[in-house]
Amino acid sequence: MKILVINPGSTSTKIALFDNETLIFEHKLDHAADQNFQQQFGKIGNVFNQYPYRFEQILKILTDKNVTQLDAVVGRGGMLPPNTSGTYQINQKMFDDLRDRPQANHASNLGAPIALEIAKKFNIPDKAFIVDPVTTDEIEPKHKITGFPEIKRAPGWHALNQKAVCREYAKSINKRYEDLNLICAHLGGGFSFGAHKKGKTINVINATSGEGPITPERSGQIPAQGLIDLCFSGKYSKEEVSYKILGGGGLFALLGTKDMIELENKYSTLNPEQKDVVDEMIAGISRNICCLIPDFEGEKVDQIILTGGVVRWPLVVEKVKQDLYTVNVGITVYHGEKELEALRDGAIRVLTGQEDAKIYN
Image (cartoon, rainbow, N blue to C red):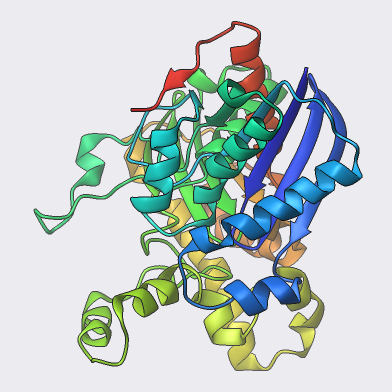
């Protein structure tokens, strides 16, 4: 079975073609380094405006690779209304909701539309799927409570990769994911943190709604009064403030870059104030890992898992391990992410009859 997987992120689009579980090729489109992309989309705007550009780039790769037949196309699930974990068949309602009514303006919203359009090109429109979308909701109701009755916390996290690496860790120690208590931190362009209690993610620190620490391109948690003053200052539109939180904040706003490789290479030359920005981002990672410990209600946390592109920088891992030394919980690192494999596996489970595709409605 030939399975194409598509993972659009804030700074890249990753694609891979598998023959069952065997990788045929993998390709990364680096949008951060693409000057044409940055000129067109580097400022405030609806992420769906990027849809034709990313779609045409992927189509060109498939043409260059002489791909003429596919059995399934799987895209990363986007900011849909909260839903259960699983593999969903992409339909027109999902396409329309991501285009017209997304829960947030995020690059993952492009995964399903691009997958569906490519599946149509290969005459398999009923074999287009998403797996464990960003808004997968297993949060316990009490953890959604805020001090405003009108506002509830909502899921917005890297469910696909977090669950994949947690299962991989469990397998590595010959245990079941459902028998472990794990804290997982996904560290990419945005950061999300999950409390995985016996196979269910009972709480998450949302990667898209302004929770958590500073990230390469997101503001993280902002003092409420300062944000209120900014919103009513008359200087910014709603879209501009949203962009500061979700795509134009964090290291990008403070240091002028969201390229972690570039930052790693020049870290030793940064002045003390610039190093403080990076160090505070890393301390925020440790701080948010710790704040999930109470969600296990006294049960032992078996392992802390760090994953995502940012953990390729040794300084990040070293500092987090130093920060969490007294917590006395082991730390396992999975460099990059397992999202492509997790997308593939979700499709295989459906194509081989191990599970039924869920219908989005």
